[in-house]
Image (cartoon, rainbow, N blue to C red):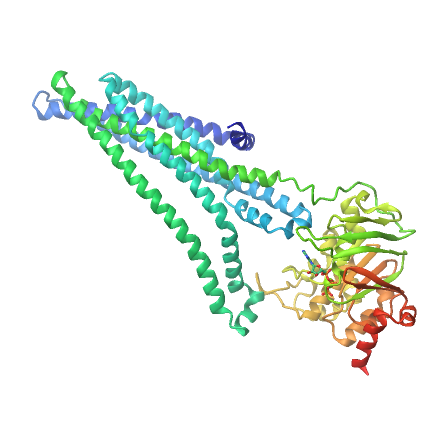
Length: 595
Ligand SMILES: Nc1ncnc2c1ncn2[C@@H]1O[C@H](COP(=O)(O)OP(=O)(O)OP(=O)(O)O)[C@@H](O)[C@H]1O
Ligand SMILES: [Mg+2]
């Protein structure tokens, strides 16, 4: 129980800290609204008695009736106005809380170790905690105030009923207990249903995404995937919604039963009042008021019970939110120190006996890899698809925790270097670099946006990579938006995008530049240019590039040959050719095509 409530307490504390005024106002409004029903009851009772007296001829005077009518109007109007005001205040608070809490989730996801994204269960959790927090955090607070409001009403009605007969209190109370049980039970079931439906819901939304996404649109048409995707989406959607419907049906049936029970208790109470009327003096106003009080008591009880059940249900969601926010990722995390990156690099990078296994995988993707890179050296990495080249780069960048081994920069272990320092000094353009729907200028300066204002520097990088030529021709030059998803931007060809990405790498003042397949999409002339100018492009930096073009790899000072996660050979082109191993085999195979 203690553990259960700690989540609620945390939510309360959060709301109290951030939305104090809302909490105080809500408390006041609840108290006020709680007293409205009994006031209304009294007015109705008096009104009926007055009207009955007038109609029965016992009274000629209308003033009291009119005054009471006026009071009824005032009650209706004021309570509705107060409620609307409260709704407005609630909406404001919800928006604010939702903003802050969503931001907490995005903070968490964007600072989580990359390995986090390789585990499907994490994606399920993200999906569940992604939206609707504002309302969920407010809910328990609102529920409690609602309970307070109903409680005030309940007490006032009790006092009234007790003044007539204690049995009326008992009958009104008894009807509510089964309702509580039903509501709590179904609240639990709804939560668990949503929980186990998340994976399928995610698959459905993936299919939907493919049907909507611009990037996928070509292939969806060419491969005539429409039917396949639509059917898949529809099956998954229906499976989940049928389960939900089934639960809703059971819940509604149970509620009908409960409502029947409530009605039965009400009728019994009315019978009790009629029976009382035979022995005590009860006016028509009293009779109507007592009936209303019995019903009102039951309504208030149901209200309390419903809100208790809601607190219970919301608690489950809130618990998941905090579990996510407080999720301990230390198993994946790399504890980074605060040491500055050695500048300039003097002895270089050493990779010592590195082995790596992706989280959740049994197989080692890298095995006992050792090599070193001297400052200013140009290294090429070659190897078959899947031999572990990209994985090696991810490890070099410190994106994953190594299974075994060490990576050092001037003898300083990777983990000891402060993260932002580290990413400043190591620049990498991955094979699957991002095409951002931002301006050209932003796309190039993305790693150092604070320097984006320096147009000359952006231009220099673009000139080096060959992007400048086509950017010049664009309507807004470097301020042209790329991509067409959001506004009338310009779209680029695959090779043009690659030139932009290359400019992104050259823009940085990193000491080490790593390029994973930097020229795969470039035409032969552009590719030749890049590699011929490579020295000049990456002047003052150490450069590592991964390429399947053996002719390009040949220009490197040293070539590393990877196979099945291991470093097979290392040396200059001449050395490796003389060795007559994997490199020579790969080189000769490609050379054959080009003669
Ligand atoms: N996130 C991941 N989780 C589990 N396994 C992965 C992950 N990423 C890659 N792998 C596996 O690791 C192996 C090496 O992949 P990697 O991307 O490093 O190869 P590569 O040498 O870069 O290949 P290519 O030349 O095709 O780019 C592959 O067998 C791949 O299936
Ligand atoms: Mg790769």
